[in-house]
Image (cartoon, rainbow, N blue to C red; front, side, top):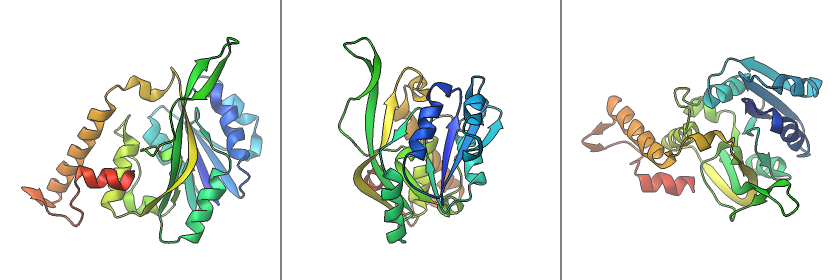
Length: 245
C-alpha cells in the first residue's frame, strides 16, 4: 500500500481536484490521509463528500511540517507520497515510481521531474495554469515517493520550521546515507499562484544557507567537528547539491 498525505490549510478551492487527481492515478491499494491544519474554509465539507475514501484528521494550525508529521504517524503503507493541495501529479506517476522502488530494493527514495505551471489569463479572459519552464529537478517532497522506514532512519520534519522544512529533511536524509534515484519523467505539476505559501518567503536562498549552518552547528554539538568537518560524510555544499540534483 502507498499512503498519500495531503496537508491542507484553507485549500478548499483546490481540494476536490487534488483528491480526484490522486484517485485517477490508477494505483491500488492506496490510502489518502488529509490533515486539516486548522482551516476555517469549506475543507471539512468537501472532504465529507468523499466519505470512506479519505482518512481525515483536524488539528490546530501548526504549519506544514507538523501536518505532514501527523500524516506520517497515521500512515500504514509501505510507501509514502505527498501532495500539496494546490498541486497535481502527472498521470501514472504513482505506478511508475512505486514499480521502480519495488524492483530496486536498495533505493530508499525515487524522485521525478517538476513542471512549473503559472496561473495566467487566456485570450478569452479565463484563468488557467500554463507551463512556464522546462521540467527540472529540485527539492520538493511532492515529486518523490519514500519507503516508510526512511522516516525511522532520518526522523520527521522539523516542526519549528515554517519554510524550508523539506530542504532541511533532505539534508538530513543525505547525512544518513539515504539512497535516492531520479527518473527523467515529470512527477509533479507545481502550480504557482498568488496564494502559494512560499510566496510569503522571498529569502529561500538565504534560508538554504541558514539550514546548512544549522547542520554544522548540530555536528559540532555532537562532537563531529573540530575546526573542520571530520564525519563520515564530508558534507560540502557541492556534494549535497550533487546528491539532490
